[in-house]
Image (cartoon, rainbow, N blue to C red; front, side, top):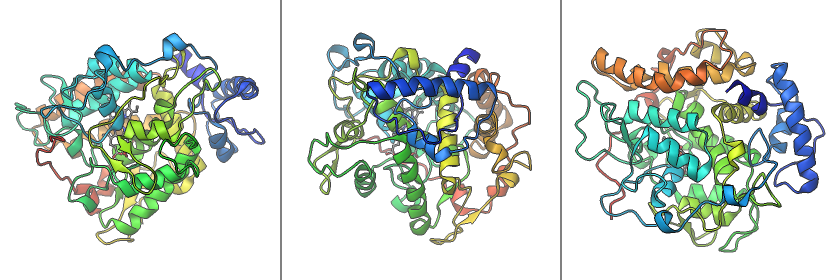
Length: 455
Ligand code: HEM
């Protein structure tokens, strides 16, 4: 992992560095230079780029480490045979995550929608080249908070059928469709905010999709081949979505692992994991056609239709290369880059029960003074902070017997420890969730009706 860290590196100053998105041969050369410079930067452990906006604008669709090679055999993702697309059957579960839904619809994850940690590691590696420790962490968190730790299973949508549950834990087995604030959070790319849709945050809000689709250009044709999406565009858009949520959602809340990390991480996943890679554009590009396919959308802008549970990996689609999997440290770098490039997107706090009543909490208060808004992004601090928040936030979501809570924490810890041990977490990354208690949105935890996208 340390070797990977050196290769992965942290954001760097790129003053005057021209845009690198959607590589061509000339851009590739620059990408190689950037990789060298970022390595040097990492060795100096200088993590805050002096020109964060320039860094964000120059990042390729592969994330902090540009993809410099294309290997057709390695990168083609099969959509035939065992991996042929099939709509979910009536007893098969789908939920809020288009990446998981698409993987299940092609048999990269169990088509039932009920998944183990190992199946997530293998399936998401095969479909997207997501690094094993990221899949393991996300899946283990889903098991610990929304799944069944006895069987080591979780649901990618609504409640696990016949879940025996874990005695003492009231939130167990709901699946990630009903994980508001513990996993799913407000201001998603295209999902509703839970409170504004009667507790349903797993369904797609077509007007939100129309808005995010439009940031990729002016191609209004049904195929959308002319649209282009980048990390930078998505980071700008996230700030806008948060601002829109503040004026429309009386219970808007941000400040837990869900909104601080999972939601912005998902904005990045669209670009870093759903882009198509080619010999001409090895770092990948995302057009409207692929974006719509992964999100289960048909039709042309202005009259889009969401086909729920029908997310699809496009035919002839090439994932990122196996030599450049998307790692946990890179996910953290990409989320952190979004915050430093667009400081307005680092919001902690919430509305107080009416629209536009946002009250912020400082980084100092949330971390008991360990970090402030600047030091949070120095060295490995941000990664140390978010991975600790995942663990320290558990008691707030799992109210039950101490022994059951300890089991859930221990389960998650197995997957978190290898990531945290590779970071330089010199200061104890405190997370004082007590300061969030006054926000009504923090305690809003709608638990499903059984709504597993059955026809
Ligand atoms: C074990 C792995 C994963 C888990 C547990 C997981 C879980 C989730 C959850 C809970 C959400 C809702 C977050 C929100 O409120 O916005 C979500 C959203 C999302 N995820 Fe995943 N995810 C995983 C892997 C992936 C992968 C591999 C991709 C991409 C290929 C992906 C792409 C997305 C996107 C784009 C969204 C936002 C959807 C929207 O707002 O419409 N996820 N995921």
